[in-house]
Amino acid sequence: MSFKKRPDGRDFDDLRPMEAKAGVIKSADGSAMFKIGKTVAFATVRGPRELFPRFLKNPKKGILRIYYQMMPFSGVGDRIRPGPNRRAKEISMVTEKSLSEVMLLEEFPNSVIDVFIDIPQADAGTRCAGISAAAIALADAGIPMKELVAAVAVGRVDDKLVVDLDYAEEAYEDGPVADVPIAVTSRSNKISLLQMDGEVDKDQMMELLKKAKIACAKINEVQKKALKDKYEVQK
Amino acid sequence: MTESKLLIKDKQIVVPGEELAQGMDYLPSTGSYRDANSIVSQLLGLVRIDGKVIKIVPLTGQYMPKRNDVVVAQVSDVTYSAWSLKTFSPYQAMLSMKEATSEYIEKGADLTKFYGIGDYVVVKITNVTSQKLIDVTMKGPGLRKLRKGRIIKVNSNKVPRIIGKQGSMVGIVKQHTLTQITVGQNGIVWIYGEDPKMENLAETAIRKIEAESHTDGLTGKIEEWLQTEVKK
Image (cartoon, rainbow over all chains, first blue to last red; front, top):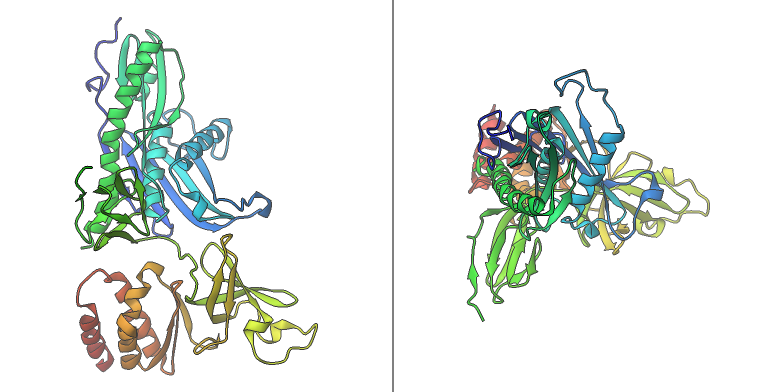
């Protein structure tokens, strides 16, 4: 039970400082930057557009394609080899599933919406930052959505339950660590992503879900502000 | 029964998932939906309240084809009996031989003689199916192939502002720059002027309208600006 204080001095329920901006990439149909602590995510939306190859077309609804990628020097160690790998494919898939839940894809049959998530700087929680950024970018692209999605990694370090783990906590060696990324929809408060790396018991899990919902509500406020600011400034 | 109440003001910016009104007295329109007792936004846009109806006017987004829209499209492919057109939306449009011209076209004729790949045409959308198959016609006033001039692309959500009330805004630009302009609902604008300088000025004017579309009294401002620019 040696984990008494978080490495960066935050409270156990505190998120890292956040910053979000919509419309950062001018050539895209929609884009966003989401920063939480040292983790930065850029999301770029292209579409809805014609889908090729044609056999992928779905006449009932449009499809959402996510390309998650960590940039070569985003980590702290060696250069990351760019391009799809096993981890990136998994994250792309879970991101797609968590976002397509709130999107009204039936309005774009036979077409595709491509979302590119790039991580220029990583300090844990990149898939969550990616989802939060992608939700802003999709709204910025004018794509109809029932609500927004915010995501955060909660977890357990030693015997303490913490919100928004950074890399130092994820790599804590003197006790068990569990990392639980959770995505929560903004209005209905439903969970659209739940993964777990590590072990927690049932009571701890229920507590973590509660904490994640509170944290995601805070992230959602930042997302809303980013979208509104883009147009308020113009006025 | 709880009392109905509005939670937002007219012309306010809202984001997807934002609650707009509570109670059954209000009705959702484009860009909003009903969720149990409340009306919720599904788009990033401006709220327009028209009596009991709440509508969201989108601020961004791709052009989606609608029936009776006049658009500027580009020929992307030619088949035996039709032209396939790029509409600058997620979907292609088909222009059949019958709808393209009243001329007699012999069986097996090379259709590129009429409209070749890459040509721009002004067409009217006659039908959009649920699967977003688009039929267009070129029979009607102003529907034609575009020769000379230039094509520019603007945000399709700003098109109503560029056209103005009964074409007042685009009319002013045409009048002062002595150019011909066709604004497609899909955000493709064709400009042609005898004087290239005037053609440039017309393009700058349209870009200016696009950038300042949210300001009030824009028609007057653009007219003043054009008057000084033309004299230079």
